[in-house]
View 1: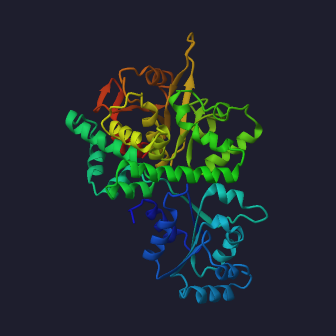
View 2: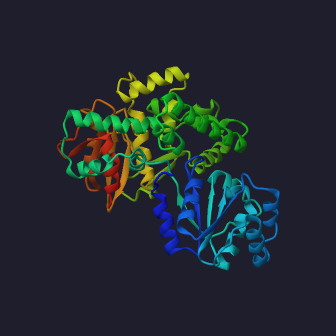
View 3: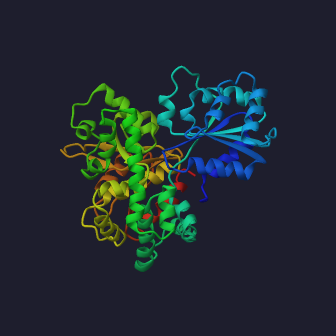
Length: 447
């Protein structure tokens, strides 16, 4: 069991909201929701029961057919499982709750009963598709579960390097070429493996990158299967699969018609929201006016899409045979890939921002008298102002956009940061920082 930050969020729920709300762990498939819920139940309660609605016996399912008399229900549940429930010291886990909408509806009455705590896990896209005819409980404390972030990856690998990263981020000084190359290579390993627990476990078990890549491709195929169930037309899958190519094309927004090869329809908007609800992607919205609250100024029709896990993004970028993938991983880790990998690093920073609990925003504009637009990659709320972030894999000397943005919105800009593979430095007030510092720097913004 990997150490996960969401465990502390569950502790806070138990301390502050246990008995008042059920915890709902929501996130993409294979992100570790079930494992986290079971580990928390085993560690924090005297007794627990886990009901997996994806693999439930007929006898168990029959118990849930009648919840009118909770005294009888709990007696039957304990008899069937052989577990004695203790008031206020036991928890019941409803795993894959999206497969049992009537049970989810009953959460309202189970929580009101007050005897036990409840944890639900599920894929949000499926949860939303299985709510017809039921009342959605308001007694749910929602907790987002993201792929493992870089700090969690370092914990899993037994490395103490993240403490060094936090110190370097606070110091803001160069570390020298040798140390910078080592730390950058460590971060590229994380990017290559990603934060899906199965892929991380394969890496820790010292399996080959071919094996790690197969794990990731199995997850991608699982997502594709889920999308086909929701949208048999295949257009939802096409939108998902087109994300790396559209980022590589450096377009200032995602184009659904390019992804599907067909004219955009009103149904495509529903498909987009289904994709976002799956938590497999991260929407980044264009902000019309960065001078006001970012969320209030976002343009819902102008957005980019990133993958929620950069490791999966790497596998989708290089859709080739296993042997070729092994060579690509070697080149990635040694920074010898010939392609401009700015969009790969951009996806990594998007994942870092999302894991910190922030929304994703960017801004485009066309300077007066110019024919080409400018763009800054990410905007972050920083107390009453905004922090501006650019991401590059190379050519760090070209930072016209972030400089012009700083001048245009000088009254609201708190700091400007350009992340790349280069060591820490400054260009006037612009901070140039290596990508491995991004998790610590972004976490500190607004704090």
